[in-house]
Image (cartoon, rainbow, N blue to C red; front, side):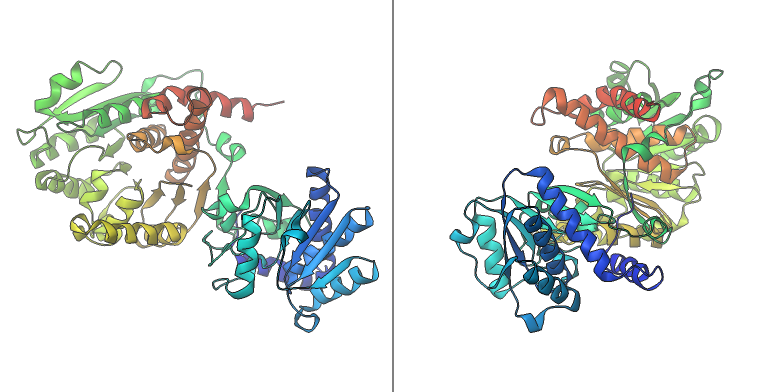
Length: 526
């Protein structure tokens, strides 16, 4: 499903009115009716208080109030602005509601008596805010959040930025949100996703061609779209048809990263997986692998890769493997860094860079422009901060590092998109939610995953899933979309039986088959 910014939604609104001839009053009527119908569907209570601002969001709320009043509900509207401050459509709804007998008061204060025994419809601010909520409106929002009431937000919880999901000074903590046409970015990104509660997307008459336009380049990754991406496995095939992935990973004390990456790669359907390992650790790996193969590579005598491993890796890629996954647990030693930089300049097969491979590029994202093949980076927020700033991030004080991470969290989509377009690389910014950005500027927002996945090794699993899909010949952007959805779905599947507190990375690997089966069943449903 497409996801829009506030400006994109305003443009859809404007074109609907001016080109398609659907009056704004009709859209507001349908918006108000959809909110009222959702209230009636969700609740048996018959007492509602509508908190309305003076803009079109307030008009939607007043229209909802009138419909509920006509159905016999006890409805009161508290308008936070004077009549002469209302937008034209809001003013029209106010006058119609007054004529219909709806109780409307002009107030800047809400009391416990007002809220007692009522549902609350939040129609204070809507999607258009671009500065912090202050003054009496902030006081109303804080009072509302402290009250023991159920809240339904109209379009978006008041005080949440439609474009970032950030809290603009103060924001309504809604139990439900009814939005119109398409979800907004602020519904999907945190903390807006939490503040929105359960989200309902209602059709109020926007033309379908506007809602599905190619110019809307943000979209969610849903079960339907993910299920369509699963690679086919013809009846007449063999292991060579499903790719051979070379995983360069692991070091002294971090062998598990390599093993989890390789196992996830196999579970995702790769035909063959070889783990390139520091030669002094070969015995450790040989004792733990079964389906995987092991390629000993020159090391520095301390369980880390030597730059001398380059020729052997290049030869293996030229003769055997069709995908390179590199980074989990490799360290950032200078020899390892030299090895990576040389591989980036010369390798001609698709690559997945994770963990230390990204850390090595700290402040040197320009090196990605030299890559001759598709390259995908899978940073978490800390790695993205180091990549975008400088190698000095490693020596920064904790509070400064936290500032960088917060900056990226506030602009997950914008920074991912800009960096992908600048470098020509594909970016998978891990987190809640995970963002996929491609060099064309398209953004895909994942909808699976849970807090139980915030544990060591889950990123290595994603790297393996992604490399396994690339090995089967998938286009990089499709591999990214399916990988993040499948990864999150496997985590959700594991959490259903194990709970979130006990979830570990290997549980996700073991749940990949069930995640695949779930997607297959959805795709082939009657």
